[in-house]
Image (cartoon, rainbow, N blue to C red; front, side, top):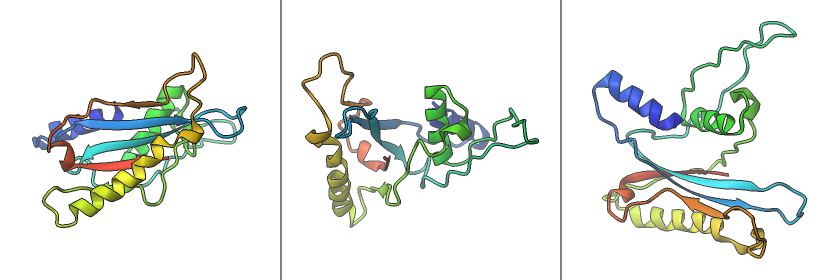
Length: 170
């Protein structure tokens, strides 16, 4: 919702209509130590006009003095900050407390443009990268009552989907 709200606000200010479709896939993994908590991998598919880059995560609390932290949360400026804020709200903590819980790998961005001469190579690279989500060794399919290991938004079967940017994080 953080991303959709930002795009809707930008559309209102500029008068321009940016597509705010957001598609995603995710997988949940359990480490080899069964006592460890699950962790998630997510890939977002976003229109390049909406966000061209992830940007940086620069969230730190405003310290008023040694005992008080400002209750005012700074406006999230980048996609990374919006993702961090969404995760913080999902688990019920402040934005700055979630810094470090969402990790962005260095090579997290793939830009796919159907008419680009290098489209096919980029598509194959993204496919290979996302195939990591399907590895079986980190999922115990025999456990009963365990939440899903995979999920996604509804992804349309059309060329429109391929005009989006794929941005993932681990």
